[in-house]
Length: 105
Image 1 (cartoon, rainbow, N blue to C red):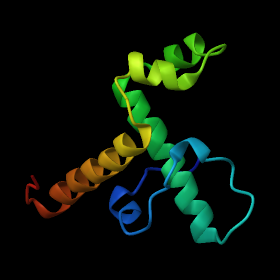
Image 2 (image 1 turned 30 degrees about the vertical axis):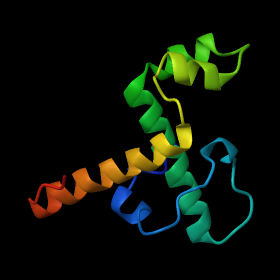
Image 3 (image 1 turned 120 degrees about the horizontal axis):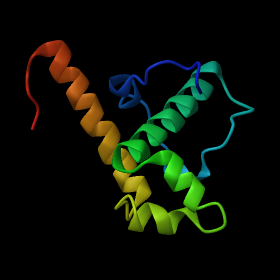
Image 4 (image 1 turned 90 degrees about the vertical axis):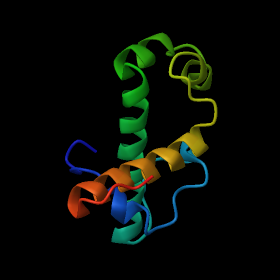
């Protein structure tokens, strides 16, 4: 993921988002586009989590426990899938705003 580059949120909105981001795993099959979409979703998920809490600390304290508990209690993410969809939509709108100069609600 480190070499993937910047997430294109506008492009992400043109493809179906994962139904369950907790099932994202290393893609070993699929077309080049499917693999790229999965990497973009993984990177966007990390960006979302990092924007809400310190990601390194989150990993340290959740090593022996369920990550979901910490996402809810520390990062205030109750429904990671809905939060992810909202995050992608917000980021796509921000990107569109910057390129078009038009503010979206």
